Image (cartoon, rainbow, N blue to C red; front, side, top):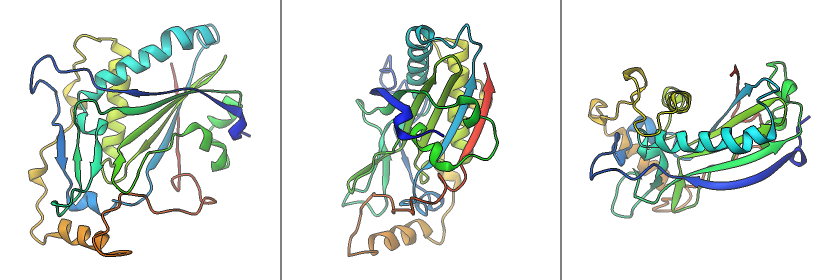
Length: 261
């Protein structure tokens, strides 16, 4: 069983997208309006997933993790964020806005935790029944306050001589299942091809950002926003997540994916 004591946090850092070579050169917009599909999930807890990667013993050494794998994952994550720029930003709710706003400003970054675990890698990644609490130390917390909420938090946990896991916590109002999967696949693509200078994504992995295709003639976005503001007091613009029962399963049903490098 994985317990909190089985995971040692080595580093907590922030990974930012690379600076644009010229103004407006980023591959994605710096802000996005929220649609009524998004706002409905504003205060729901983040969606958390785990991906396990088994490695051959001659690669799964501490030296390889420290000197090659982790730096490569950090660098490719930075390059991936230029295609998903809003994910490095924050969700806020300005007093002059009827709806919450997702925006990125230069200097924003994604929280990345690097950890080591002595838990049973093969037990956790087996696909057999595992108590959700065993996965908790492998998944990062997503920061949120009354004033702002982060969009993505990531954790790389190394299992020496076995492999590693990547845990993700993503804001449910910003990423649905398709977008979160697209982000992880894009990160994997850029990491695999190791193209640090260009980091071009194939069309299959390019995100579509035009929110004008979402029509809202009934003004459901403002209706949902008003409902949140009027709950637990007038003009309640808090971006804190609703508390959930800690005994319930991690994100209701954690995704446990295992891949072989």
